[in-house]
Image 1 (cartoon, rainbow, N blue to C red):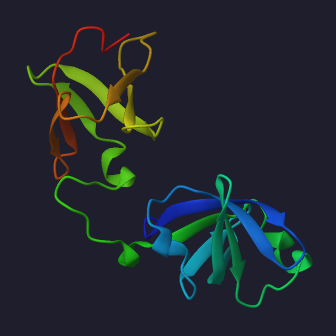
Image 2: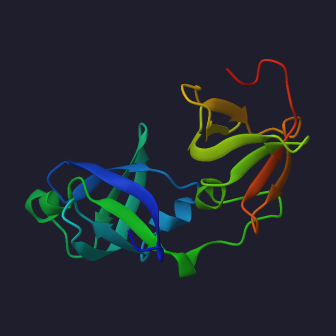
Length: 173
């Protein structure tokens, strides 16, 4: 995938017969789906289609979208299973203590003592706070689950792709 795009969701199915699609979203910015917003839909074969949001509404755990010019189930059938992206030029400014997932994934994790822990390979959202999944270098070592809370995460240096965490008993498996 081109580094000029960031994933915002995946079209998992059609919804109804009037061209609505069901999306599992991975963005915290609902404005990505505001009418008039342009998204890039990339199918499993790598084909890109530019789509413009016509309408958006929430339904259960999904976002339901319609796109300009797609007015029937047959029209959106080809978009099913496509991944939706936004161009990086459309990123929102974040507060100093906020980060995009793509900025955190891949960072190296160290204890405050300087000991290497591993690298962040995934971010989960189980509830109250994000949990960073850290791939540990030791053979057979299980992934570490690091809660993104002030008591644990002491420093995030995006320029050097380095995260410093405090040692906490029982944190690593």
